[in-house]
Length: 436
Image: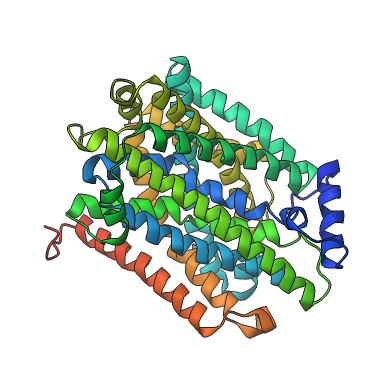
């Protein structure tokens, strides 16, 4: 992803670029060589562990126990497919999804796509920014607005590392991802999980009522993220310098492995969130639907360690995902409009909705869940565009996706569209059979 100026690359970035060149030329092999290509999917995976996931997963587990775990699984499989296709687009074409949309679609379509994507970016930042602020406010017993101010300062400071090349940011985000994953590994050991019920919920599709449908759409909106689909293509477009199709195939191989591993880890974290909420709240406290309430109730139910670990993971999630969300917003605007805003201005603009929600006294967790539904409704725009581009031989050449992958992508997009349409129909007061 470009920033509009020639950056002074860090030592780690230069070393990684040199190492990748050695791997592509056949002079370096092994696991450590493969790790040089890891980074883009790790950054993208943060979008699948952001505070919006906390809100929807707590509601899913508290309200329905383990019954909505299958939604998390399906959403994660769709996410793997589309993140893999996004990375493929950037590696093969050297352009990101927003740039290709600008080059190949009519101008009115471009403006609509950009507007929808900007709304999605703001909804994304609302969830991420609020999550980090809630965590800090709970940890230090401070007003939510103060937590938001600290989150703003920290995220802006971290964003400055983007100017040093890709590797420092990948390492920073990787550290946050590791922290979140470790926290939920601890939570699974602390919480008394009913593994048999969890297994059944994972493989048995069930939507008991309309509220479950709303949460299911929110889970998909929180898991398959529009800005992550845009961003992944930008993170891979210039990362490894390839010279021929043989090298492209090798880079694609490493990319696909990273996508599966990174998104599988994110999926397990989401499942752990639902299982922790189901274990702690479903029997006797199914009304728990807010992050703050969940935190305060974890101490008497599972102990202080569970509450502390939950808070650490929430703060890590909010800060890291807010950084990634700002990176995505910058890429979307540059790609569609060829406009590059100063980083501080972009950060300030995307914070406005979050500050407005808090200033108006709105419930923070409700705002998080609503933001995820907005994301789910915006999601078909990049999904459909991505399917079109990766299927075109004039754009992808020999690397266009084959029919089985194309069918899987269309079915995934159709599932998301169908859930969105059901939600909108219900929003207009039209009852559907079985979901009254």
